[in-house]
Length: 60
Image 1: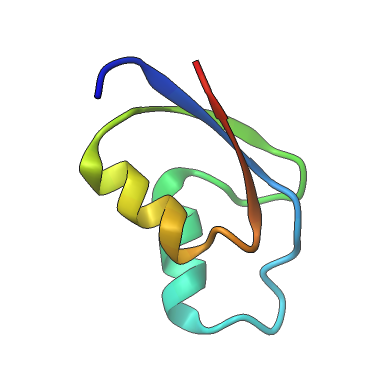
Image 2 (image 1 turned 90 degrees about the vertical axis):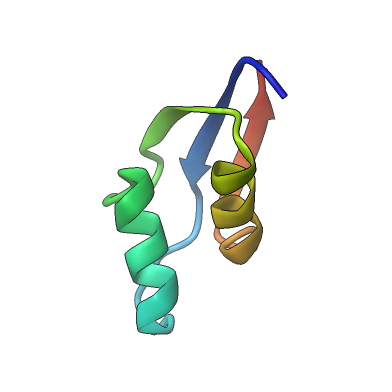
């Protein structure tokens, strides 16, 4: 797994469990439609999997 991932927050974190909020903040996603570019690692993939219903993922 090499390269990077583009992760975009597409649904609000309002009303979501605190664990989901912490994961999103850890990835740098604080506002709707914000996009961050992260390294493609197993840790990052795990974080994306936890909040997959809130984010859009693009492989680079």
